[in-house]
Length: 209
Image 1 (tube, rainbow, N blue to C red):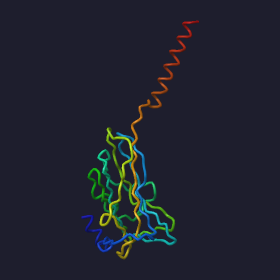
Image 2 (cartoon, rainbow, N blue to C red):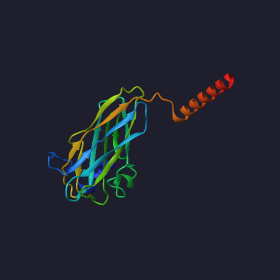
Image 3 (cartoon, rainbow, N blue to C red):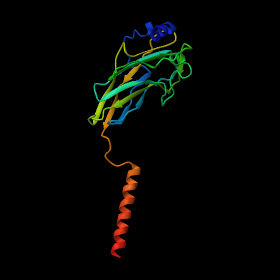
Image 4 (tube, helix red, strand yellow):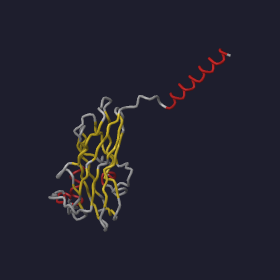
């Protein structure tokens, strides 16, 4: 099983026993603020990790869990295809053994995790990497407005170094802003309409002349 193998790799069981998130932690895990059209599918956003400190930080494993209370949003899975560089690109245990990034995706909740297969990956000072891309769909009847996306607290989110020690961090929640589907015609349709009107106007001028 994926979880059992990962726990044996880096001793993540000990690392997941996170107690507090200190205010001076140099690691920031963020969910962005995104916009999505009602009725759209295949939307995505990166959950990112930023090292705001002055020194390189080694990360061997992570787990994060997201929740939204808006039932018009459906999380459909997690992906390694991220906009920011994936933290374990080329050294991902999940990818090496064809596991999915997400271990739970049940509508309004998504749980994801991975570990490095070379003990740890270094995140340089000032660098931002992705912990994964979260995929989601929008209901066609979704009401416009902001929908909070929350990073759940321990034990649903955690970081570990290569020795199995917890890595302190600060979490930042995000928002999906739902926008109504546009009622304007598609560009191709707009050109056809404009062309038809121009042709009609030309015929009127010809008749009057």
